[in-house]
Amino acid sequence: ELRELNRLRREPNLSRDGTAIQLYANAESREDVAEAHALGATGIGLYRTEFLFLQRNELPDEEEQFHAYRDVVLGMSGRPVTIRTLDLGADKADRTGLALQDEPNPALGLRGIRLSLARPNLLENQLRALLRASGYGPLQILLPMVTRREELRQARHELARIARDLRSEGHEIADRIALGAMIEVPAAAISLSGFIGEADFLSIGTNDLIQYLLAADRNNDALGDLYTLLHPAVLRVLRDAIRLAKARRVPISICGEIAGDAAFAPLLLALGLEQFSLHPTTLLEVRRTIRHCDVPYLRSQAPALMRARDRGEIERWLEKQRGH
Ligand code: PEP
Ligand code: MG
Image (cartoon, helix red, strand yellow):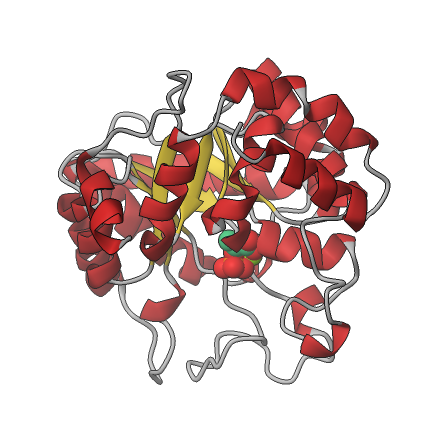
């Protein structure tokens, strides 16, 4: 079994019918990046920058961040890298004093792009570091917790201003840097048609999206199996976002944990997904499953999937696709 998986290290991400699927890696450390590279990941689809800010009392300055981001870009030797701006909030053990402490409801609080826009120096330092790293290889920037079109516009405005500053200071930065939004707040998913024109790419954060859609804490075991992808509302929101992005030719991926669960791969392919971003430890298993899938057939089964009325019916649909 392990040997069989290891053989897949050098295989391309192709389905049985020859559809090219992109398997990006989620990463938050140097080790993750090395592993992603070794496994033949298409690139880094989600680099979480929180770790740079946690377990310490002082904020990392521009220079430290620049070195960290440049190392990610260099570590992937030319494959595309997506780095997410800080997604800090009262839910994380932050000792820098950046996030508010003891928010009554951290998941609904000042986190992600909300915090970055509320702390202009924080955002400026991070964007400067990211733009400087863009001079070393393909890099794009992803914003977490986008809720409103204005947030994306404001961030883009800042990015353009900072790029001008850096160029006038003599830094070599990429000519154009793609700016994308996480789709993890239901309002963003539902109003996507109104701001998709502002995004160069999208990444669906199902960890949070499922939590918010089902009003079910992603970390609360007492909820049993309530927190799950296998709810008709979640499937509908994913289907609509993927469909719209494809119609508008905006690249879209899923970077939540479900993308790394091989059992769900047929379902995600049926919904039209072509880009997965997953933890490196799950990459080979998902690659193996995709190699057994017939993508056009699965897509033809999407209407039946969308008719499922509950978890049991969705599970029966999945069961039926075994071997397809
Ligand atoms: C998500 O919400 O799905 C996601 C990828 O981000 P995080 O797990 O860091 O909240
Ligand atoms: Mg999230």
